Image 1 (tube, rainbow, N blue to C red):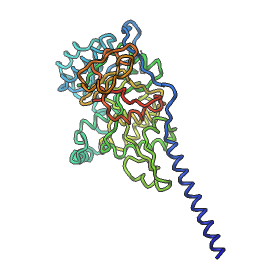
Image 2: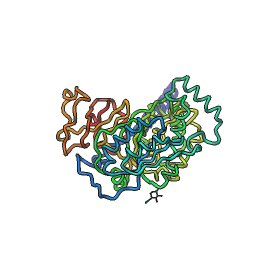
Image 3: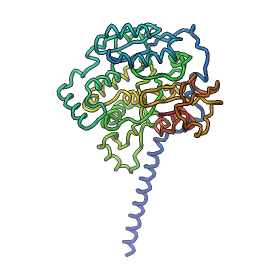
Image 4: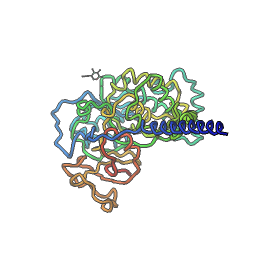
Length: 417
Ligand SMILES: *[C@@H]1O[C@H](CO)[C@@H](O)[C@H](O)[C@H]1NC(C)=O
């Protein structure tokens, strides 16, 4: 009897020790993905309030880029007019228009009139705007039809797949863009609602930034089921060190090791069973360094993803690809959040909250959302903003991706519509 008791108690002790070990491991696992907020702001705005634009200052090696088609002319003009009114009329940067078809006379002549800088009209070669050479086109088209039938956003649009692939890994090699380092991507039918009276390219270069954004939110999971697995496998294969942004984009598993590894077979999970929280930056606005995308590290990364076929057999978007490239290869201080930009891309609007003293008025004062104009302050962020639309849109993602650079969460400083 006594011997049996002893045996049992050691066994229970062992079970207890193992249990504690597993719990400890689980806690450490959660802790590993925790990104502490810094005590100071590591990514301040490039300018506070409005200043006279310094039109005589040297320009950067930069161009504005728009991918459009002839039929987009009116919508493209909306964007260009807005960009000219709020920025380029002082700085006269060149605008490079990209199209996979030859440009119409009308598009060219009207854009020449609208742009205050040089205009370049480029036709993207078909090998950059189409299926990769190895891919079976019929299979890819078939997959597009299935995606459409399954209601995957734009999954049935062949040219949309081409566009996503082009903006993920090809645009920086277009002949007309080779002679530039910096670009500002502008989509047809967007509007800028604050004045930008400084040169963002110069500031990016000066502060060592590589990638600038205005919006961070969730990716549609149905468009990217296997993307994260591919990206994380690549990271493991290349033994790339985990960055803070990478950690911010992961939802660590709460299942004890080694059980959590079973989740590796689920979509949106990596080989350890941790999950992408689907946060990413919106890429329809970007100001970034093309030399970053042209680096061998990035080229290798894109090639690896391209071979997986997800640009066609799923509907991987360039926004997620760029966000993962940044999470993989950039440090937090190399990213810039343009919090002073007002940006409208239907149906989303972001606008800085430049109110008196840099503080927001109480929420009642904001109920007439969209009607009021910003009460501008020289201490506030944003210049001559036409809208100050504040809405408590849940921007959990936005706070997540900013953790490593921003000391406090942003409850209200960003307006959403
Ligand atoms: C602009 O940048 C591109 C790409 O880095 C480079 O090839 C080119 O020489 C640069 N031009 C100038 C004037 O610095």
